[in-house]
Length: 239
Image (tube, rainbow, N blue to C red; front, side, top):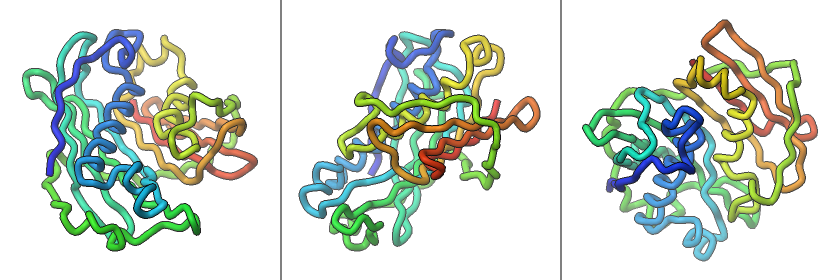
């Protein structure tokens, strides 16, 4: 099954250069993944009701090939590209009105059982048996990057608007925290071309996250978010 939808770069997902923003990309991707899961009868409302469980994003890598300007239309396609006993991976492509690939994302997810707070085997989910695996549209792999920066550059407090229906910090909000470590000038002069985010642990309202960053030359940064000394998110940013 493929979930396909038409969208427009609206002002809420455009950046200071009037292009689809990095945060906008991750918003579009998150919506596409959750809508695909809904179509497959495995959305979080269903999972909560039937299994007392929720989907968690564990990794997301997005590659930005071409910008899409404010007001322009684009097509989003989401599909399952692989399944293991514990993870389901969804690929999301974003193409402009001419059919040119502008963004490609790969999202790894798992199911967290809330009773025991343990990862569930996907085979215990009835709807998994009907899932079809589609061929990826391009080559994109999760990276093996070291992320142990020692320089703390800021802190950020998790607030009510950062929280989603699972009562933890939403996936996209971490991307916002990360992108906010750059100025408008920096993002204009060195646009982010690729970003991988690993969701290690959850954080909650009122948690204070320590933000660490380290640069590797001119084209790569790694960013670590911690809460009380515990790793929450690790990220690789390429320019």
